[in-house]
Length: 188
Image 1: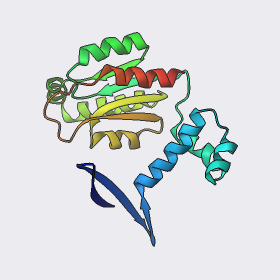
Image 2: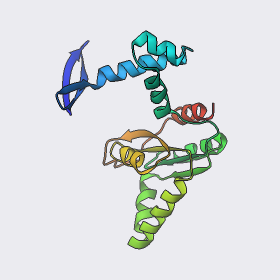
Image 3: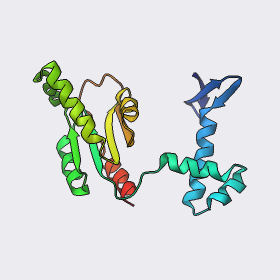
């Protein structure tokens, strides 16, 4: 991937390009076009109407929606570490009807690792992964390194919230409004 930086209004704007064979793809332009599609759909324009307006195939609009869809009435899990406001998010999860909560502070995550032998730790992590596979939606809060890994492990919908650059060395505050909004969208 090629990253180009340009000055925009005294700030710096990052532009990312990807080379695919002879083509150079602008991630910025791709994201803008996807946002146009989603904004039109959110305003009530039909898939066919969006396709006509933007000169694309209706099936592309449908597939795009399918890729990002979070179904209603889902079983939701909330996972995260290291979380500074763990108690607050645990109470919130209970209020929101989140069925599985696994949150650690920085201290707790290292204690979890230290008090287990290698095979016991491995078995417990495998059990957690198996349990999470039964959920429809996993909200995962972690480092910029761990979020993509978790998204790849599970075949279910994962919404990642990056709380810091890896390695995270202290517990991080997570705004409860982010969790509320994700759950609200998932349940509507």
